[in-house]
Image (cartoon, rainbow, N blue to C red; front, side):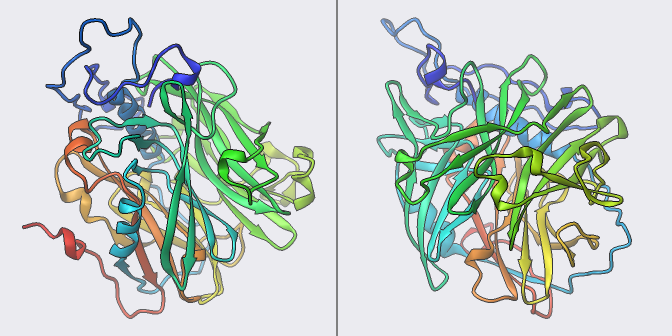
Length: 449
């Protein structure tokens, strides 16, 4: 990801243009080790007479995408509990190739994205939120003419648990495709976290990022809540009311922000957050919880937020207790009626083949031990492939004993984005919590030959 063309005197760079060397992930602070992000080669450069302007570099876009994923990895693998007792018993996960295919064929211009979250707008109508998105206005295959924008959305009609019509939305600017949600000013951009409909309005959580000279190439620069009072209108007509979340903290040992997941319950909106302290080692990202009544979102009133601490709920932000360690910045929390528990779904250590779930009797926990729902086979396709961003979409479930889950499959190499059409699409699973045994493995259409 790079600076939006609309915020910088540059036009997007396509994948056919020269690429810059990448940072090694091993340059990151802490005990993280990973292979170098290898730039693609062999693409022709700009020809004579081209404008003397820099263009968006998809290699750098990919580096920042991967950098965010690696940032997630720093959450670590500490899986200690706080006296929790709820344990999942042998959930069974199966792929949903019809859902995979629905997103791959809905619009040839939309060529894949990650950071997949959903917000039910009404019965049978879902809003999808995406992070880094490949878009080719001409709809040519292979992404070689596509550009990366920092976010996009889709509206989908759902009937009987089957994927219905999908319409994708982004903005068109003078230089080509642009993000639907733009940073206010300067060389900054927004990545979506989660969203919820509150008292008729749509409330979406984002993190703001800016370029940096660090190993990742970016750093967090704020936590934003965008309130949309007219979510039933087409996304291009949405009125975006932006609010800076005052609880954001950026520091040398990590960040604190809210909205990694949110949960609407009668009379209360719960917003899950993370607090990072890398001085504690790789397990230095902890899950936090805030809550507010619906009235606090119209007009926006952050003074009404409360935080869960060792002594219960209060306005003491600094006394917020840890729900569990090793939290991910991409996750979900929802209520599972079939087991009468809340379930948190996330990728193990943020970047792993393992999609995990934990149960709790209340939104604040105590949370039970993690259970593996799925081992992503895509991570075994090659040395540069990896998986992340596991989360649930409860509105897609057919019964109270199941969840529909998505995750992302990616590669460290830009060449794989251009030449492997299997990666960088939402990947769907149906998890049955009443089944007798676990299941994981390659999808039928993708078993190795």
